[in-house]
Image (cartoon, rainbow, N blue to C red; front, side):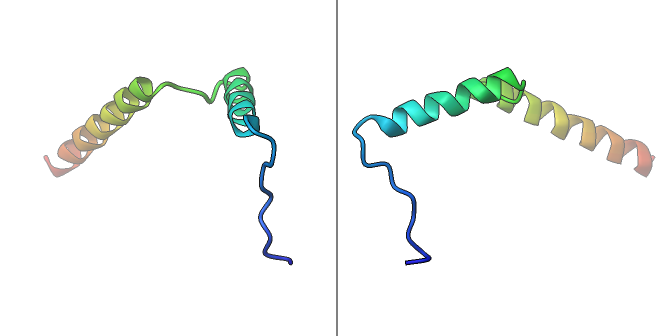
Length: 57
């Protein structure tokens, strides 16, 4: 019984919980759209590559 997962039994509750999580994340400034995450990842990768190139030169 210790391994029992907490399941949501109410229909639509998971949607409400996900919406609540998104709202809280947005309040704390950690919520970003997929496009924003992709853009940040590309920028970070580019920055890391530039730093490695500078060290190798």
